[in-house]
Image 1 (tube, rainbow, N blue to C red):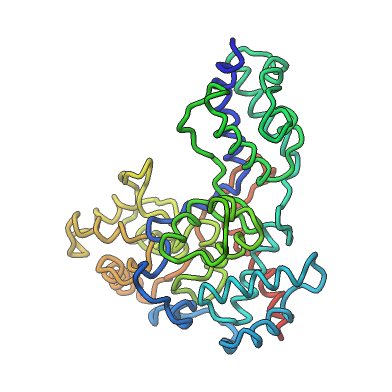
Image 2 (image 1 turned 90 degrees about the vertical axis):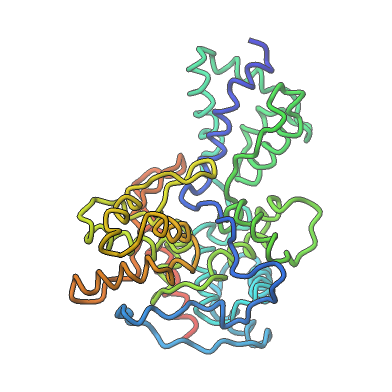
Amino acid sequence: MKPSLLLFALLPALLSACANVSRPAQPAAPSAPIIVAPSAPPPEPDALQPLEAPTATPPAAVQPPRPAYSDPQAGRLLLNRVLPPKIRDRQGWSNDMLSAFTHLKIPYTAENFCALAAVIEQESSWQADPTVPNLPAIVWDKIAERAHGYLIPLPVVKAALLKTSPNGKSYKARIDGLRTEREMNDLFEDMAREASKLGLPMNMKNPIRTGGPMQVSVEFADGHVKVWPYPYPRSGSVRQEVFTRRGGVYFGAAILLQYPAPYSQMLYRFADFNAGRYSSRNAAFQAVMEKLSGKDLTLDGDLLSYKDGRVYASATQSAVISLGGKLGMGQGEIMRDLKLEKSAAFGQSELYRKTYALADQRFGKPAAREQLPQIDLKSPKITRKLTTEWFAKRVDGRYQRCLERAR
């Protein structure tokens, strides 16, 4: 087989390795990831704070909210108090975090600062360009698996990858030396630019979905800049900004904190960060729907099924439709509201209100409006059973320790 054809045949394996080393559970951003339209003025800070839990839900015991500082100098003093004392380039992290909050109009509070700090610590241990253990081995295992399917010895594959890449090293050498997702992203970007020389598809897309110190979705970042101006000068793409510290922190703060969430605890935002916005609200809705309909449902926070931009029937959808008569809603009305699942609007929809009214009456007490999604995390990087619940509670532990520093 010619080297170019060999590379084409093995490309899916490299794509798989690239895509799967990213944190698997963080989805791409919805089509409208921000709460304002481009022409609307930036929302006031209060609009971006977590919303109170619905009055029908008994709120969990939480500390009284601390004051939100509007003065950047007061915010900086607070941030420097809550950041871990021994992190590399502590001042640089502080500058990037405060800048992100300022540009995103997120209030300077201990809760918000600690939430962001806890996710950074969990995702990268305060590394701007976090390393992935055994990354070359992960990639080669995927390539070898694919090559075996074509009955091609791995040495032949490695010989085909000896072609010199734009940085002067061979593609094989670069795979052997991979340490971070940023390096893998750069490798694939070079392969895409040299697609014609390598005999690869001209329209191939970069499969790296997340990156940077907070493992932010590249698609979320691309959607965010369309409705909220990116504040920093850049010479490259939004994708490249995600892999920088300032960009990773900025987009991470946006996806974690720049949306109204009806939660009594920050814990549920952490779950949303891992599983997608409003997943904790939606998982609670699924749990209620499971009890009302008697149908077994996966409590993953996805009310509909999506593939290639299209909506497909889901078990949750079928369960809701089966209760259409009791809810007094037709299929068209139900689908209208289910399509709001990735936004705050679903919480005010007719379907949501009628479902909880029925549940509260049926159960004789207020049904939960928040629940941790039940999702297993899978990736070549993960060597033990991990879940979204594990992630959220792990981050919450870091968050609570950060709040102790604030006190």
